[in-house]
Each structure stands twice: as structure tokens, then as C-alpha cells.
Length: 292
Image 1: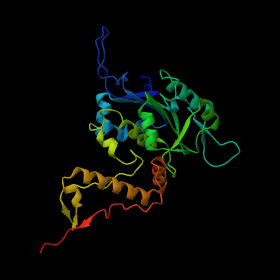
Image 2: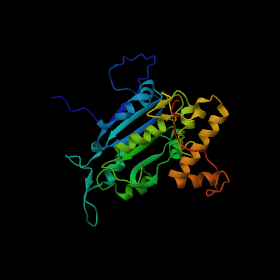
Image 3: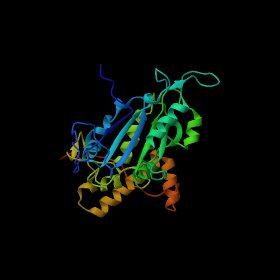
Image 4: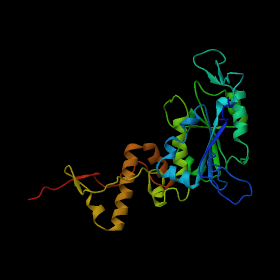
């Protein structure tokens, strides 16, 4: 019987084809493209990837070599014959905790060939107690060469290995998931879409929510009237300055109403009073006038 395949690491992305005197099997797993932004994910469930990252624009960018993805199977670094990766929490309590020695071996393997400068290559532990993930974090990650993500499971990760490796703890939000794989895909997507050429039209990234500290303005398309609701007339006017003013006003209004925290930060950055009684644009949608 043939030995089982080595599942320690698995790469996703475009084959880097170049002249070589050595025969190459084009059916082998894709190699990491040297110039691409890279994501390395340590996980107990490598088959969960690329998941949604392999679809749509991020999937095409992965195929074209604009970024690459490698998963490392945490189980491969486990202890003993059964490759144990966790144990009961010190001091008692429910659940299991990922072992420091197991995670350490995985992190060391993931660090091979990466720059020591964490600004160029962040090493992140996904945790509900981490710093909230923001668009600013996505921009910072996208500006580097890549990143490593450790997907937590069970009750979490032994704190000693987090401290030893200086891991950046990041949270997707104020809720708890069964593991970090879903969060990892969301965070990678947020960073990858900021890589040049991934979206095609870079204006899309510059105009969307959080790009300037504001929520995005409402969007509309055909038909001009639907269920008695008309597209705001200013958007059909062809007057670009007025359209720009409307969008800015709506972005400010929505941010002030729905995210007071973002509004206060935006006003502080622009020298404005968050409680100012500034006239913002009116209703988001308008009822179509009946024909007479």
C-alpha cells in the first residue's frame, strides 16, 4: 500500500512556468509565485480552503497569480501516534486548548522563507478577544508581502505560544465562531481585494465603505422606478458635482446615524464637531410621483 500523501502544506495558485532543463509535471500542485502576495493559513481543516476565496474576483486573481494561498495542516505537527494537538485547560474548565509545542512547530514551519519584519509579514492569531479587524488593518496587510493566519479551535490557544511568537491577535467581531477558518477567509478576502489589479477598477476600492472613514452611500440601478420607489433625481441629472455632493452627504448621514463611533473618529480627523447640526441630504429614496 502506498504511503499517505504529505498534507503538511498545500498550495493554491497559478503555476509559475519558466524554462528548465528538468522535466516538470504540470499536474503537480501549483507552486507559489515568487512575486505574488502570499497568505499562509495554519488550520485543522485545510480542505476548507480556498473555499469562497477560490470564487469570483479573488478566485480569478488566485488563478492568475496575483496572490497565492498555502495551508498548513496543524494535525501534521501533533504529538504521538494520534497526532494530538490539544489538551485540557490548566486549572480545569470546559473544552480543550491547542498545545503550545504543537502550535510552535506549525508557526516555525510557516515562517520559512518569510521576512522577519512583521510590518511586511504579520503573523496573526484569530481570536474573539483580539483587536477588532478594520479596513485599516486590511490596507496594512495588503501593503506587505503576505501574512500567516493561525486558525483557533476549541477553547483557544495556549497563551505561552502567543506571547513567545508575539502573535497579533485579531477579531472579526464581537461574536464567537467554532473555529477561525471562516474568519480567515473573510480577512484574507478583505486584504486581497486591495491588491492592485484584483478588482480591475481600483476606484471601487477607493469609494466603498470605510475607505475614507465613512459608510458608503446608497447604490441604485435600473429600473428607474420599482414598486413605487424612484431613484433619487440627482443621480439621474448628469450633474457630476451635485452627484458627488449627494453621495458625500448620504455617506455622512448614514455614518452619523448607524455608526456614531466612526462618525466621531471622522469628525476628529477633519476638525469637525460630531454634534454639529449640519444639514445633510434628505431621504434615501423617494416615492415616484403618480402620473396625471
